[in-house]
Length: 252
Ligand code: BJW
Ligand code: ZN
Image (cartoon, rainbow, N blue to C red; front, side, top):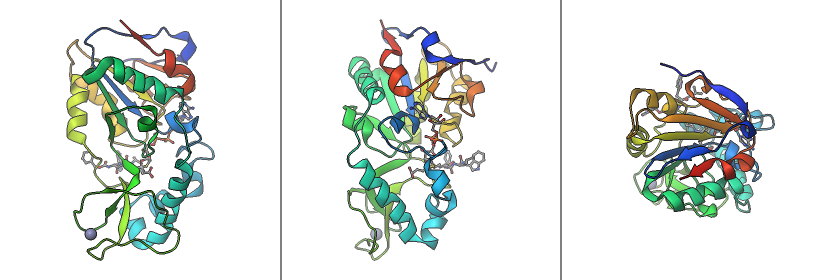
């Protein structure tokens, strides 16, 4: 049965009960970093207003114009160098401290703000802004803070290096670990994601087909506005992540 979502300002809801031993899965999207000054994609003034997705976020775009793609990511590396986590990232780092192995944090974001807040186990399903990889050989991705505005970087094998991020048409990372954790969770929370990009937008409907240790998981959305997949959540708590997350979880 698909639940009827309750959509209301976050202040109208009680904290989410997290009984001892409950497994919590949190999926974050660009909205969680908005209050830190990192641009989202689909909001007014977001990255997709200034750049065509097919030019900067597809393998074909990189093949056509690698210089443009590297300019896009170099600019984002430059801006992300100085950004600080906000209270929403902090709240999730504290939650990990309290729940340990019962907590799974999966982010679609490539920024390092969860790590900067102190989260230790973060699954970056769409890759990481400060990592680079070869576009051809299987040399492992490596840490790289450089900006490439002029000369294009090359691998020892001669091929072009590329940002170690996941573009449209590519397979997201760590899907096996993600679906294992999803299938076992009791509480699923998405924070700040428009629900427009799959497979992440489909995680919440996956929960309707599997029961965790306490039956079917409760699914909650937290963000500024109703996401495209709102109908799959039990409730949508509307508001800023930095204001709602610090008091979202009521640990027992
Ligand atoms: C706040 C806030 C505040 C603001 N507080 N909230 C047709 C149907 C279904 C699927 C497909 C289809 N055709 C093609 C596909 C697949 C495709 C897809 O989903 N396309 C859609 C466009 C339909 N997906 C893929 O290709 C993926 N791969 C794939 O499917 O492989 C096949 C496969 C699947 C499963 C198993 C095996 C194989 C890959 C997707 C890669 C996405 N890559 C990007 C770029 C990453 C690198 C980079 O950063 O540049 O990932 S695109 C971009 O979108 C980025 C994000 O992670 C992703 C999601 O964006 P997000 O986080 O939701 O941001 P916004 O901006 O959309 O939303 C922000 C929200 O925050 C808003 O709602 C605001 O209201 C809110 N907000 N301020 C709280 N203060
Ligand atoms: Zn190479």
